Length: 439
Image (cartoon, rainbow, N blue to C red; front, side, top):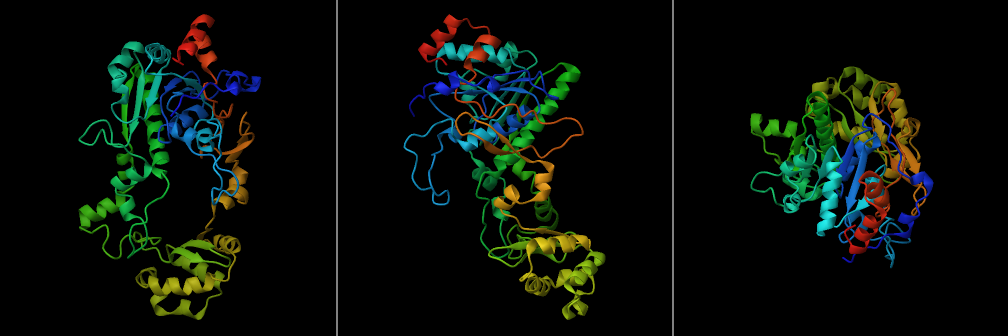
């Protein structure tokens, strides 16, 4: 890919985008962030949301994939005509991953650029990366060398397989991680082939482990003064989600695909029944219902108007209902078929039954009063894409709030601030590095 020149917008950022002191519990923590894609960028976004000064390091010669994703026009369902002049500052995925961060560009293959990166590391207390294992080593950025630059540095390393073991150098993305960890094999419905997860959900799941590890290391450093090297494996993060399945295999000798497993929407332990997703009125509209005991069953029967089939002996106890789920689900699906999913959800909840409308992304974004009431979604302005909607961090504190100070950086937007104001380059040095392609 050809080098991308500095955007004129990056040189003419409005005053409202100018860097300012951060606010929040992580204020004062500076992160030299080599992360890209999702598994790293989402982790450092969480740090940035709560006050860390995250400085996102990019290379104009090899843009982050979310910056390189094609920009399409017209019908988003068919993806229509590809934009003939994609702007690396337009990528919605990049803008979502990198809000509240500063952005600089450094050419690590240029000796002066490499030296500048080391100056930035020396001025930081945390360094993060999620390249394929070996990349940082080829640049000489080992933990030992980082400690020479910043003695109490925290080095957060994130990869698919981890930095040790026979597969440490294997490449990975979300679907690969999901497959190797065992998650893809147990997905789907009974008697059907594995369905997989589609998108790279494990990128985001592993990101929370990554962020938690960095926060733990920061807490430890606050107590002892010592830094740490962190090695997080996304595959191992996926295995952490397999708990009940691993127990079935090791304790009961059960196969992970034996005709009745995976169990789809049903729950085996405890004996929950009904426990599934049932059709409602409208095209592809559904409701999830979960009943765990006799009291909840009575509440469900009351909402249904106690049809005759609910009095059958096989449905009299929770164990009986669990043992006759096929018949129970058929009866319940026939009853829900002409019901509105939201009206039914409210009626069942009022009767003490766990129930929820199966919502689409459009529903959660536009129509859910609970999500709107908690203020999960918010808008930020961006010099290129304009007003954009973001999902906030799903955590609320009594006093601490997210420091939503700026949308994602334009390519190289903060070069002057970081290299001159923070690292002390003169104007002549800055211009020379720019002319030589070091930044």
